[in-house]
Amino acid sequence: MINFPITCIDGFFKYPDVIVEMLEDLDYYKSDTGNFPGVRTKPLHISNLHFTKPFIEKVLSTYYNLNIDYIRWESLDIRGNKTPSFVEDKDDIRNRSWIHCDEQGDSNAFAGVIYLNKNVKYHDSGISFFQPITPIPQKDIDDAAALKLKYYKKEDIDINEYCTHKNTYEKKFIKSASFANFYNRLIIFPIDMWHRIDNFSVGTGEDRFTISFWMGPVYGSMFPLERIFKCEL
Image 1 (cartoon, helix red, strand yellow):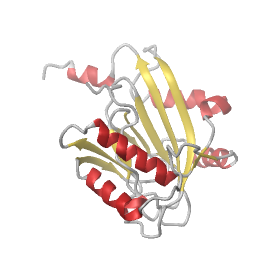
Image 2 (cartoon, one colour):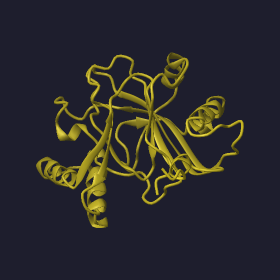
Image 3 (cartoon, helix red, strand yellow):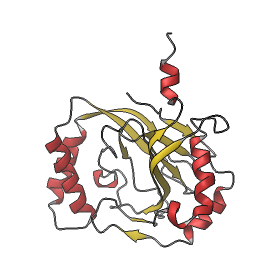
């Protein structure tokens, strides 16, 4: 059972320009393993504690009344991200991420993204969610992950084979929801939900700029969707 609904909040940060300035002053690092494209900061919940506490409280307030509910969690990760487009053509299949879920089978955790490009031309550089048409074999998931890692690490691969494999893999899913990229928009979703970045290009020549995070397992008095489905209606 999914315990957290997909949630979209516009104008999430009260002073988003201040958050952008803070993130611009940080160092960014490439992945040694190729598990993500572009560059990321070190974990903000370790290096920027003055930001972390109010950020966590604001995110959790989406689902809980923190004046009443006692909430705890086991793990947390918050990072700034900068991702360039891979090719000039924004509609090229290489300019969107592989469909994936961050953690299979963990319904007590959620992930999220906040868009921080102020001048976005391509608003379709947001996120989409998917449902498998039939259960995806683990081998298909592993093969897709292996190809993704090779491409993100810029290893020598056959580009035609890569694009064909990715296109075939995407046909195993049906899109269930999409959210466009707008400045200071927050999207939260269950961590085990299939999703992808629809477009790495924002259309201005700038890197796609976001905060990404995940938290969980989360424990409280009652999960948000548990409260809803408790109703007999």
